[in-house]
Length: 152
Image (cartoon, rainbow, N blue to C red; front, side):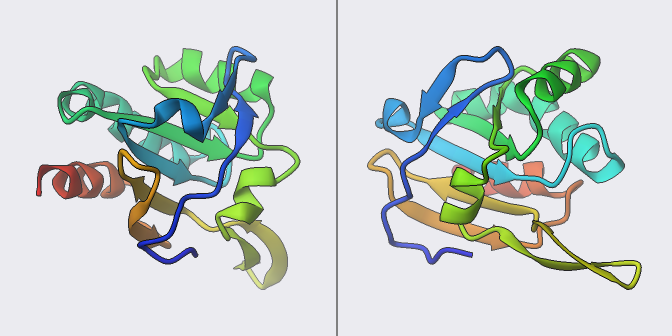
């Protein structure tokens, strides 16, 4: 996980519609950048739907929500449509941002050691500096946690 107080690494990733997004384009806004393991799995769905339900409140705080996983653009599109998600999902199959943000680690899944995304959320300020970093977040509680951080 990256430390707070540093410049957030740049990225250039396609969203669920194939449109490429960069961190630079969000300068002047707060960014909730969350990394999750896989589309349409129980924890990831709870987290995404939580951000979706609260999205108007994030917008009120002049913040954008960006979800990132190694799933494909097509997978993100299906996930967005199935749950009517109102925010941007970024596809990172080459692990560009996932590795830059230090969320690709060994995981122990039922005794099997595999590499995967550790659920992590960063709050990036209007100047592109990481102001908060939360590792191994609780999927269900994370949207409320991030909203509280914005309200402080």
